[in-house]
Structures are given as C-alpha cells and as structure tokens.
Image 1: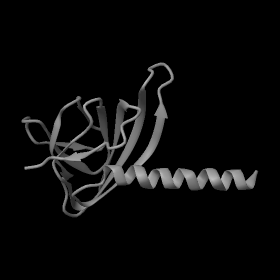
Image 2: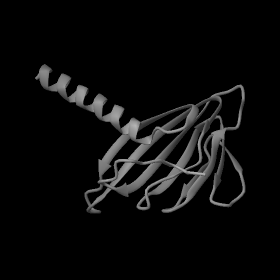
Image 3: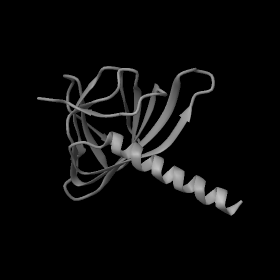
Image 4: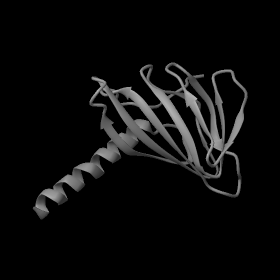
Length: 140
C-alpha cells in the first residue's frame, strides 16, 4: 500500500511539473502551478483546471492568450493584480475581487500592482480536456 501511495505521489508531482512547464513562458517574478485538474463528468470532453499564479513584488507575466476552448474565472487571493483583457482598460483587482476571460481573449497586462508586497491569484479554467498548453505568448 505504501508503495502505491509513493508512486501516486510521484506521478502527481511529475504531472504538476509538466503542467507547469506547459504554462511557463516569458514571466518575470511569478510562479505558476496547476493545483487542480479534473474532468467534468457531466460535460464530455471538458475539464476544470485550477492554476495558482504567485507574483513576487513587481512581478509580471508577458502578454498571452489561452486556448480557444478556455473560459477562465480568476480571483485575487492576496495583494492586488493589474490586468488588461483585449483592448479594455487596465484594472486593478484586490484580494477577494474577480474577473473573467472568454475564449479567444488576449491578456495584455497581468502583473503585481505592488513593488513591495506579493500577490496571488487563482485562475479556474473550463477547457477542452485534451488541451496541454494553457498559455501562449503573444508574438509582437
């Protein structure tokens, strides 16, 4: 039984490593971790994926998009995040506030609003189960 638990834990850690690698790109001062990945039993072909984004003070994410199948609901857990989706205004969201991204949206600004305090957000994706790359950098 112990061997099964250890093997399952190692598989979980490796899956998290590869999932994180599928999100990584040109990010400065942030850490991205998949914290939840579950197929939706009542929606064939779709999964729910939770992504924790942790920003160091002054941390930023490069402009990016997500899969065309992805609907995203993000909640700021700590600190404040500056965000711009498509050509909308740059908005600062504080702990407890949320925003959405729709399929095909472009996320031009995503950064810690503070140069001295950390910030964290949880992004929850509803996405095609077979999607392996959750973030793609915007080519200028």
